[in-house]
Length: 390
Image (cartoon, rainbow, N blue to C red; front, side, top):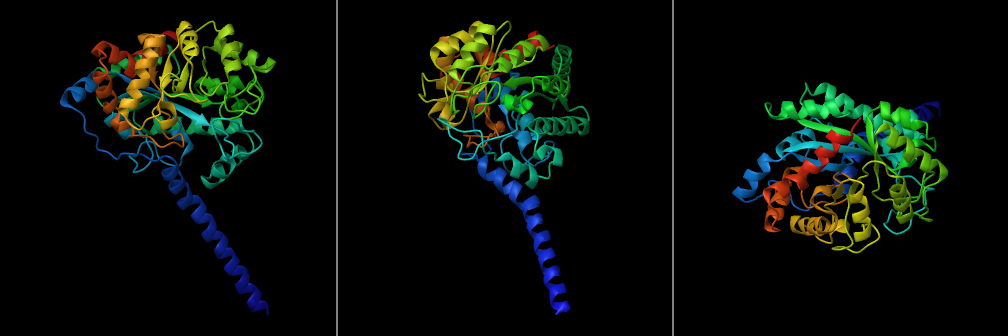
């Protein structure tokens, strides 16, 4: 009997080991690949004229959730949308790396409660530190450390932008060195502060320079466009906005409720951004911005990143993206529109970051001039960083 019990225990231990191995080494990449699909696989074909123009551009993207997933940024991956080698191949100069700290189950664009969380299990499966299992702030700080570690291992080929001088130095280097990429840190939803405005200081020190007020659910700071109540800024939320502006951290209105957008714009003393969105003018749904919102956000001097995925554009290709950009430019002005891909954001995209030349080509077909395309594809974002980073 003792021998039987011994072998049963051994068998159970082996099953646990095998189960953990599958959870840790098999599930995360399969989950990431499945949730971040690409409609069309590379390589991507564009006209010689578009390729020639694209090479001259300083391309910038305001939103990618790449740090959520378990893969090495310095290695070219066969799944997902963004890594450093593919950013170089796509001629991306500046990529915003936005961190996700919590998402609700059965997530949708109309109404979500904040009482469930998909990221806890993902954090365990990807072997994040134990501290991240219960603290959203720790999840943000952990993802920031991953970005800094990648920069440290890149031998100067990937740099993180925190200050105005960083981007000036980087742009100067890029004139003489090939294969350079820069990134900056953002947060998808102010729930990452764990309800404490003072946590802004910790996040700022970790390099975060853009914080969204909400994601898919209402939080302590304010309402989400997809939340249960869709309220405006709370007292703490107003204090957070005030302190973010003092510290020169961009307020990101992506996913914010209409009331939060109104409240932030009443308080705005510096440009606000929308890191990734669509426009109701070409794609009417609860996720996208109205013409009035576009105009008022532009009036702060900010930049609105137009997304690539189907809910943002009501299309599945670069032409749909260019159509949304055309409408946004017509409403808000050429100096206030940029790219906001939502790469690696658990959405299916028309192409990965190596296919951004297709947007350049579609903008040419929309009748934009080379100077206008340069602004849309990155110039507006880079100008904003150079003028308003601390």
